[in-house]
Image (cartoon, rainbow, N blue to C red; front, side, top):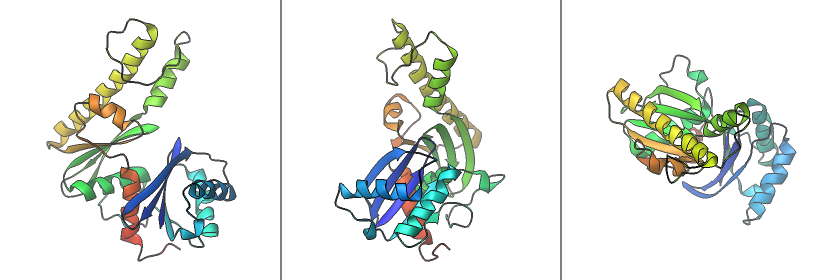
Length: 259
């Protein structure tokens, strides 16, 4: 089996693939202080809940946007799987031209999402990933990564509001029943939720006008299923897009083991 690891700023998602099929996934907190042995204990316990042993893992691939966590995960893979993990970054074969001023600046998760989306749809695309930051990535009809936009994530935006306005309480992020709310909590929920929906629709529409194409808009990330029904711009939701992208990249690089 293949273990794929997507390390984000807030959460780390683990996925197990048997051939090309995702058989199980887990979401854990991203912790910069966790050691390789602690990962071994945690992951072994998660696997054990489903009767999976560490020695069943044949390979691993990692996408990481939190550099302090990468070394511990690489050490975990080398020690417990007895082979180095593939890491998405310079030197890995993506099969996608990166038309960015400095391709090394593009976050690994953005490239992984772009590869997975184009592999599935093979057309012009905008991928919207709702994470700690919300990213908008444009892929041309020829399969080229053209660039995109980065906006503060919903959690960051909400937290800034709570901290700056001392009389406003923290509220749950939900889709409210109306925009014209009758109380403070409802007003905040309406502003946060529909304000963010407007941000998504606005950026996507500007991208379409700038590139003069009609791309398919694919959403992923933890809040994609909540926002997509209210956003006019989103055409499809792919909850496992990043994990699938890691599995695809592994397939493209498996003949060249990492050092």
